[in-house]
Amino acid sequence: MPGKNKAAYPFLIIAGSLACLVALSQLNYSFSFKDFQFRKLDMLSDIRTSTVEDKNRPALAGNSGDGRPAAATDSVVKVKDSTGTVTTLPNPDAHHDFMSYTGIMQYAASQYGENGAGMHAFLQALAELKAGKRKKVRIAYFGDSMIEGDLITGDLRDSLQLFFGGQGVGFVPITSVVASFRTTITHTFSKDWTDYSYKKDPPANINLGLSGHTFVPSSSSWAKYSPVKKPRLDKFDEVAVLYGPAGNTGITVNDKAYTLSGNATVNRLDLRLDSGQQGMTIKYASGAQSSLYGVCFESDNGIYVDNYSFRGISGVELGHLSADMVKKMQEERPYDLVVLHYGANVLWKPELTDYSWYERPMTKVMDALRNDFPGTSFLIIGTADKSYRKGDHYVTAPGVEALLSVQHELAAQHGTAYWNLYAAMGGEGSMVKWVESENPGANKDYTHFNRLGASKVAALLYKAIMNEYSQTNNIQ
Image 1 (spheres, rainbow, N blue to C red):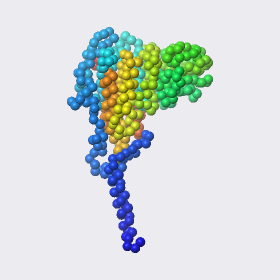
Image 2: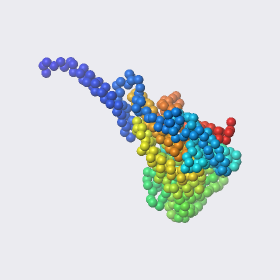
Image 3: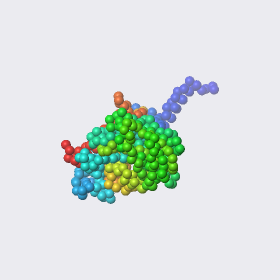
Image 4: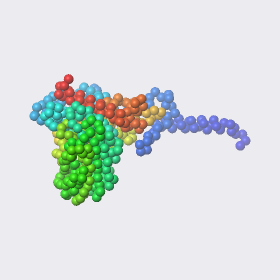
């Protein structure tokens, strides 16, 4: 066109594009799809003084204003042991901020009685085990993919057994999606088991096991377990098969015939393997196709940590467990400590800071578990750090501290112990350091630990438990 200066077009296009980009960068908008977090466009990131705005940082709702959590104002906690003796323990929460304290905090709640305070019953059980006054102590460790493949729990079990005694991996389900990844036992199985779970509802006449799974065999189903060449894991001593109501189901163990009987929600078949047998194979043989939960491997004394991992859950799913099954399981294999380790699947939207939608159902779950495990100690583990990309680098998700506040409040309200993994691993920005260090302890998703990191977490938790054990028993 005559009269138009076409040489100015490139400049106008570039200037207009830059103006649009700068305008978009001021919208402060980011979004996620499934597990992928799309980065926010920020043309001015290099000249900003802060990458995370103050409004995205949640207030520590549990704090009373003087640095102490409002949920616990007493400086001491009174607990009662099995003989009726009352002991007064210092309440660490009266002196520490739960968001930064790296030790274990213990709470008492009147509705659970003096003997239900924090981890006191568990610590007493450890002292009795060490003194030879009891034979076994068990821990049920519930979690998501953070602990699958026996990560964290395997190293924790090994450290505890080294000090308190015991040999064996504890509970192992009939099948597992991470069996090939687990290094604490060799586990193979046929693919024709029907696996009912939190993600596949069972029929009305079948209860889910404590792992969140129940397995029903077909005509040719089998599962094989073999020990591994590691200390305290290199042989099978005491073996127990756990199963649901049975109608004279026939199985074989290493080709020896057994009949599963019993109408309880949880039944147990105790086995002693013949001398020289280093592994065991269970096969369905005949009769009713009863539901099986798993197999337990222990020795005649010591401490055991059962790994109850379930990928992709938040902990709310534990509410699907029947009270009758939990109580019967407690009769067959009583637990002295229940650990709840969740958070990764709650932080699916990193900038979300309102977790009331999670706190409400999880409160009901805690109410039920405390009722179904009377006298058992509980430990709630606060979520690990989780980072996401914001601007041109990774930062701690604002939702982390908000979720930690909720988890801490659950512990305080239900008289459990509380351990802040986020603080223990270094607090804000720690996941970035774990991922990007010379010897990485976490994966590139900035959420999950690798084997090295899981071992380090186990060591931190073991140290925290042993500090409580030493203080409670006046061990120098």
